[in-house]
View 1 (cartoon, helix red, strand yellow):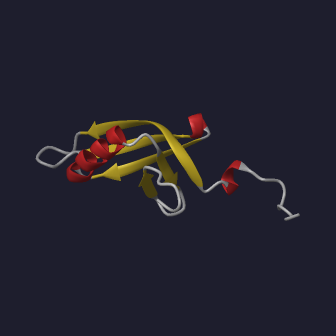
View 2 (tube, helix red, strand yellow):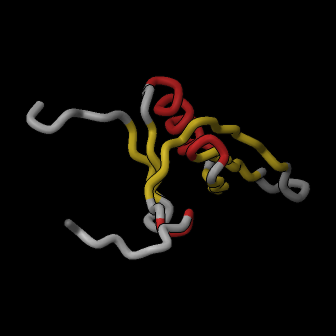
Length: 89
């Protein structure tokens, strides 16, 4: 049997499922562009991440989040992964 180092903590979990998300926009200084953020709620609140994105990325990410039932977030790599395909498909 494989030995698993204990204790397994929340910090040890690197990839989590995105359950909810929220885009926000903060106004910039007069004459400057604002800032978009994307807040991710991970594993039903076990984790959270806030990403700063530009307007073009926010538009693409919104479409991807709306059209994929399964979204994972790899925290150490700051990577969103969309959809799941079974091996061999």
